[in-house]
Image (cartoon, rainbow, N blue to C red; front, top):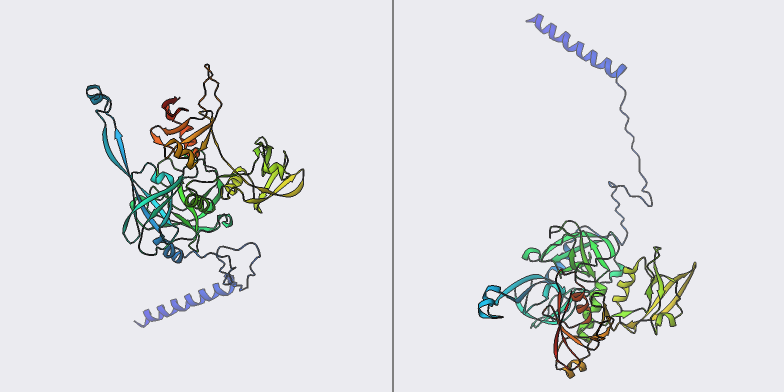
Length: 459
């Protein structure tokens, strides 16, 4: 027993001596350096926590913005009566004998913009509706009245009658929105009410021609937007409205990373026009664009007759670089600025003239016609007096017919009332319907100069 204990003691002593020798002679000492790292002025490392944040810093806690806006976004239900024809029934019972009417229901979102019940949404959300119903976040339902639409920018204005003050979202200046800024999308995707998603502004002035509108100044974000979000709110971290969610870029129909919104400055101007005039008053600068050059800015290529831009001292070859001190890099930037302004307003235009920067004040004119390239005609809105004289409540006038027909006939002065059996109420809407990329012929119903109904087919 003593021998065993002696051997164990010798073994432990040997281990201690071996470990001590390793520490003294072989192992290199571990060096710990403690230092204070001074933050660089322009570069902030990912693991650096700055406790003194600049005033423009936006927190990633969006609860305040969500609580402020979620009760101001509504669910919009669109019920449309559709007619389906049965060719076999028509064969036996005559034309219309096989027609079957049915209800088609669509849904989307809307944004309350006033305490007395004005709601802005997308035109495509309510298009063709025979009945509109709005559901508030508290599940109360109201019938909605359509005040007016702007198909060109995909905006519509609704009104509900309420006996209380509604929560609403205030418009913000979308020109002040910056790329990389946090935004929230609030809406009702897939009938899931009060849904909030977050993302950043990915781009501004995005051109989406070919999506059913001619808007070319969208805000692009990566906030998740899905079917049902259309017409909902895009808000900043203060809960202010910066855009109306309108479209997604997707091959599947669902969100894949890109969503687009009409800027609040444009939506605000359109809703104000619809309230005051019943239709949009579109302004123009009075220039023709020279698209042969690719420099930053917009080059003036021509002037129409009686151009205010020309009268203000602008010249062909001038490159527009700013409007009201907002940078203009491409045509969509310029279009976005003009769509947010009214005819009669003046804007300060900065141009580059052979390296010399000049500032000119230009009074905006009213755009009074829309050109349909496919039909080769100019379209003009009807005045209230013209509609009263004709005994109609909708329609647009053909202001000019550029087609050269063998018999010398012209449709100038005719009134287009329906396109593909759809009532038209504005020149911008008629242009979109006429220039749609349909594989089939476009059926146009018109009133001729004598007031007779005529039909025309555009292939």
